Length: 175
Ligand SMILES: Cc1cc2nc3c(=O)[nH]c(=O)nc-3n(C[C@H](O)[C@H](O)[C@H](O)COP(=O)(O)O)c2cc1C
Image (cartoon, rainbow, N blue to C red; front, side):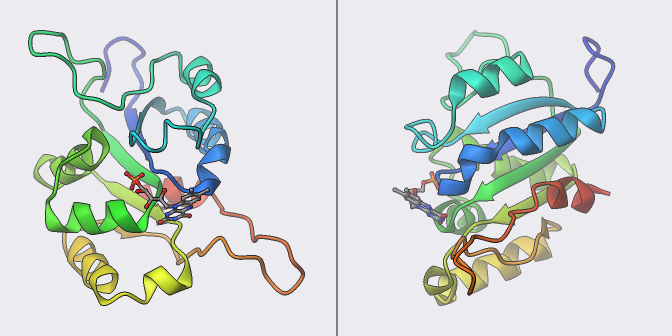
């Protein structure tokens, strides 16, 4: 746990899905449950998918997206738990394959070895989710202990509105 705040530290990994614009809902819910939150976003996600200034004001910490320079201190303490929300098709497949080409997916890859609880809320269209590689990735990550929320496609229902993403599912999955 962090000595600074005396609270457990939660990494929130955010990928470049449209729903990421609402990630403040997850941060608020986590803080209400007494987590200290640090956000790690993919480089694409920081390119307009979320309000970076608002997230940094909410967490009191800079969003991490790139690796620190050698010799710089680690910006965040080690995680007590990690949530990936929203997690994209791209990042799910890279995570399962062990391709650590962004700080966000490298952080997710490390969680297995760290042994901390990990929850993931994919936002992936039905068309992409049908790809066999994606299904194999889910099986592999579940086998590594990752706790997945129910599929969410982001597509409007019959009434034309998108169903609620249910951000708090990520925290519920951590237990
Ligand atoms: C407006 C917009 C919305 C997107 N929404 C999604 C999404 O919900 N799920 C997804 O898997 N990809 C989505 N994408 C595609 C991803 O942004 C793209 O695959 C990107 O490479 C993902 O990078 P990341 O996994 O490193 O964040 C969206 C792209 C755009 C332009």
